[in-house]
Length: 107
Ligand code: 2BA
Image (cartoon, rainbow, N blue to C red; front, side, top):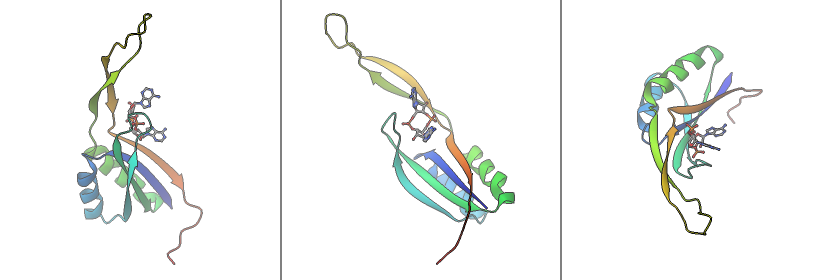
């Protein structure tokens, strides 16, 4: 068995969830925050059999889009004045970890 941890954009999470549900996956959604942009995203935990992992990954691939986010970067000039300029960051489609599950039990 594997645990898929997928960090997805909040704008994609409903489509991913609907598709996973339709394909019979059990999963948990957790509100999370990116360490870099400190923007909200959603972490989906999917526990599934080894042979279904590729199916779940394909659902995530098909439903998560890449997006360009503009952040304001504020370095200071030599004279100490702030100099704000926008920087582009590409976020997503999704960040996915697949890990082995040593033990699985519903109590
Ligand atoms: P954030 O940490 O808010 O990162 C958002 C986007 O900012 C990243 O998109 C990446 O394009 C950029 N970024 C992140 N750290 C950076 C850095 N040190 N320098 C320059 N740019 C940086 P994604 O790579 O698509 O990541 C989207 C979200 O997935 C992340 O949000 C974070 O919540 C999660 N994530 C990404 N990689 C991870 C990892 N190795 N471990 C745990 N969570 C991760």
